[in-house]
Length: 76
Image 1 (cartoon, one colour):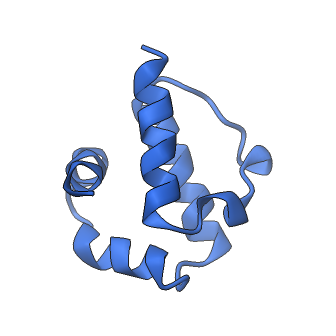
Image 2: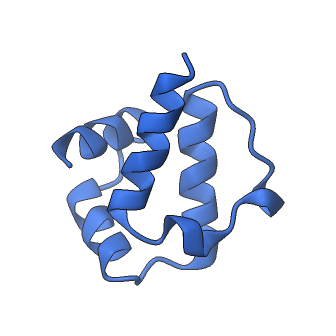
């Protein structure tokens, strides 16, 4: 999970991702925040995912976000 935080910090170093990870796991992030986070991650890997295709419930935990990153890394 530390690797997840490192990747997220590369995307946006101004966000405290330890808190962000906790918020994901506690289900406190809003749907908008999850869509925005997933969009930023995809953009980092050069993948365009239209926001309307991102279903927040599919990314409502740090573990699920990490799986997305692993998948995107595998597409390089």
